[in-house]
Image (cartoon, rainbow over all chains, first blue to last red; front, side):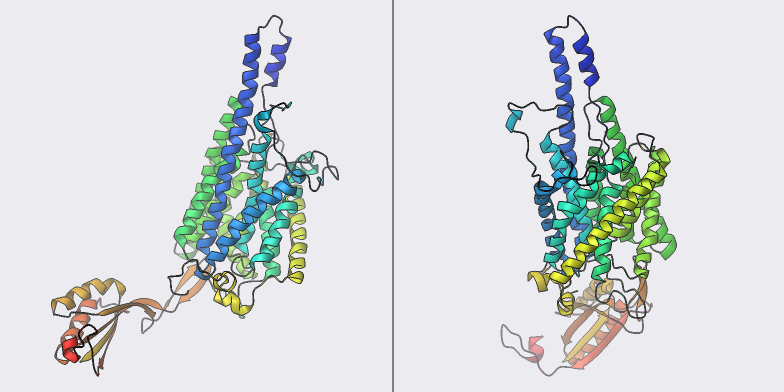
Amino acid sequence: MNTKYLFPLGAVAVAATLPGIGAAQEAGVEAAVHTGYIFTTLLFLMGGFLVFWMAAGFSMLEAGLVRSKNVAMQLTKNISLFAIASIMYWLVGFGIMYPAEWLVEGWLGPFFAITSLEPMGLADTETALDYASVGSDFFFQLMFCATTASIVSGTLAERIKLWPFLAFVVVLTGFIYPIEASWQWGGGWLSAAGFHDFAGSTLVHAAGGCAALAGAIILGPRLGKYSKDGKVNPMPGSNLALATLGTFILWLGWFGFNGGSQLAMGTISDVADVSRIFANTNMAAASGAIAALILTQVFYGKVDLTMVLNGALAGLVSITAEPLAPSLFLSLVIGSIGGLIVVLTVPLLDKIKIDDVVGAIPVHLFAGIWGTLAVVLTGGYTGEATLGAQLLGIASICGFVLISSAVVWLILKAVMGLRPSEENEMKGLDISELGMEAYPDFTKG
Amino acid sequence: MKLIIAAIKPFKLEEVREALTAIGVRGMMVTEIKGFGSQSGHTEIYRGAEYAVNFVPKVKLELVVSDGMADQVVETIQNTAKTDKIGDGKIFVLDVNSAVRVRTGETNDDAL
């Protein structure tokens, strides 16, 4: 989220100093302030429900890329994690991420600062009208928190029990994500250090990727994924139509993710910037998909649809750190490098036996790091981004999330165990943990 | 009576059914199967990792016909399902002891 606020305070000041201005003109100034408040609030509401829809995108993408015996479980995890994120963000997350008072200045917000909204109709309050309503801000930010958790579920699919996964989501959405995000978007030490991350290539995507990576290492690969002789055994997804639908839903949701992160729509410059962000975001997704399309054809002799889907998402993640400043052409370059990263790093992870079922680590972590570094190409919307500050942001957030996630995963492993029994994993988590199947009429896969 | 089992290429099913109906076959059972023969499998790449497709999709036909018709049915299936490329399938012929029509209780040739 960028931290610039453009609102017509200048106009208010000018009007207040001019002598002899009538009530009509005062009303005009008030209307201008209201207009800014209304449109920015509207931006958050529209951006928020677009980002909400990304939860559906992740669900469909993951449902399509897991084997049919684990689809119902994957869907259960996705809807549960979103619900947990909603409650944890209200209970502690929002308060930690946007501290009214820091517990440790710039580093740690207050615990258990439960979110409350404005009174109905803004009655009898001195509401600041220079931004947007608390309700819309909370609603919008909550969706980013849930997105971070969605990234984790795909990587760890097919081999983690439901409850330890959900326990991790509680900690991730209530504490880990809000703490690291407060360093930048809450006005903490990282934003003071000059780090730039417009909509969250690092704060959301690389962070989710790091939590997933720590989990994947501690959890281990799916049974049978890697043979003893080092051979990789592909486990093709159950439904590529759903995976494709999921990718298109994420692509749509991303307009809200990046566009809403302008955080202002009360002036002509802001609304023009939002439109610029939409166009750049779309370009990066398109070029990421094309890069994967061409590269898989060249490398493997056939196009791999699952890689094209990942390529589009990697393009989106890559442009997320700075979707405003680049030209359309530069967005194309940034997105296509994201697609290249995915095609190169998906087999690489398999080589070191890190089993990432849906490719979330290449898409969100690796392309997220690339996107954060790519801010330097333009200097960001402020023109002041430096390579040093970008590296500092990536290192500190990835380091914090990797370590804190690993600690939580290890505690959960010791306390309740992460993996189902081998027999249950072979049967599939749908039958062994839920006693139901996503596709009960089909033969077992 | 003979039981004729034929594994053929899936896209040939409709053509074979039409040819068999034309020579007077009045029923058959069809199953989607996977298997391998001299065609063996082939390799594909999924997300950068090569894997063997050991079982190839085929369609299995099972029909029971009177002794006098068996040769003609086998010949028809062979001629229709043939593409001259590897993987066209196989036909097996077995003896059948008895047959019963569930609705009427008719037996053997009358039941076919």
